[in-house]
Length: 365
Ligand code: SF4
Image (spheres, rainbow, N blue to C red):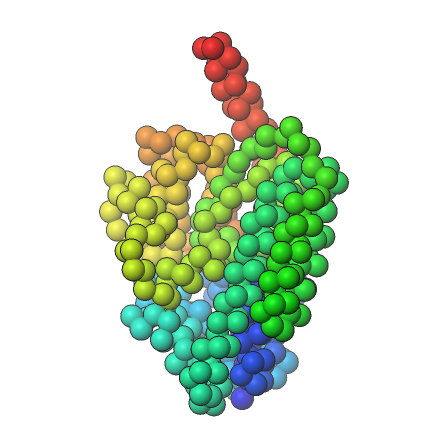
């Protein structure tokens, strides 16, 4: 058995650590690129969303590298994601790849469901080994996300553009290479320190923009033209709720206190949307309501034809909590020059708004 899986940001790093510790034979397809997209688009039904097309491209590339067991996120929710693994398996069979697809999803078994799947992949490794490998993977995931949060802050303030990105790329490689907890901790601390020491414009009060929207396009930079980085270049600090380490906490583990950030977001959305509509549509509405006073603006990332985000996009202008929202529809037609022009215009608008707010406050004083 040789295992392969699609990309989504740096998620391959914790999985790689897990597979290595359990001696699971695996391949990592090339990081998503133009070829991945072309393959996905070529073999997908036209109207499907970009997560389907890009992950299909990744899976084809994994199969080309000899993977015969493919992991694909799935779900039992309202969105069509639940059908993707089956449909992609059929497409791969039609293309002549003899692969078995395993759907990785959160069931009512929560963490135990994932651990059972790992046990199957590892040819029945002992539970103690599985839990230890899973824990190490999770620690890598936390380290990646902790460093990335600092990068989001530094990008907006750095004197030499690109310094934070450069350090982040090095940190990702070092976290990937770390083979024990001590090294991992050291790497995390070292890179956070280096990021904090980057020369910055100390007086800068960057615009604060929240990134909201569908899980995959928020977390896979290739699908959104690396929008966080582009905003950073424009001197904007980006905040996002979606980090896989956070998602893992509330999706896989029982929450003894019963309240988490997602509950708060759902509650905020209630006056406008009373239930889950699949994907992240409910969360997009709730985040707009919740962060309207806190952020200068929101960038809403929505895959073209994604029903949950289309609903959210139509509700957002009607809420009484007001904040500028730029919706970007992500698909294979999304091009850099047009997107950058829209981002620049949006940032311009937010700057003017901030200046006029400051003026009003000075008059009041
Ligand atoms: S939430 Fe939207 S984009 Fe994501 S898988 Fe479902 S339909 Fe596709």
